[in-house]
Amino acid sequence: MRKEELVHIHILLVQFKNYCEENGLVSDLTKYTALKISPFEMHRSKEEHKRAIMILCTELVAALNSSTMPPVLERNPRPRKLRSIAC
Image 1 (cartoon, rainbow, N blue to C red):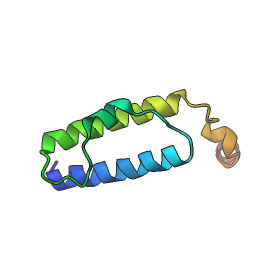
Image 2 (spheres, rainbow, N blue to C red; image 1 turned 45 degrees about the vertical axis):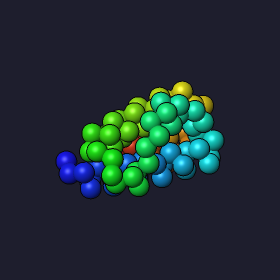
Image 3 (cartoon, rainbow, N blue to C red; image 1 turned 90 degrees about the vertical axis):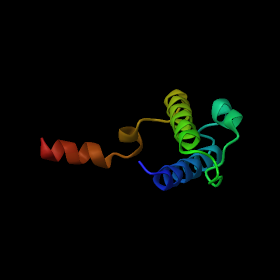
Image 4 (cartoon, rainbow, N blue to C red; image 1 turned 60 degrees about the vertical axis):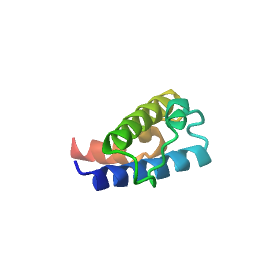
């Protein structure tokens, strides 16, 4: 993957991180914060962006798995309804 593509993914993940923080879904992403790398730091190496992406993904998934969000099927009954029609 090219560096520009990695930076784009990094930007999207940081936007998702900000959304999760604003809505109280995640609060503590210490490993990613400790890296002190922004997706807008183009002078950083491809490997640094790749590492930041992997750490951010890992922490977001861990935080969202441990949150008290209800499963998607409980929040939205439509998939259950569609599944019962299809089966």
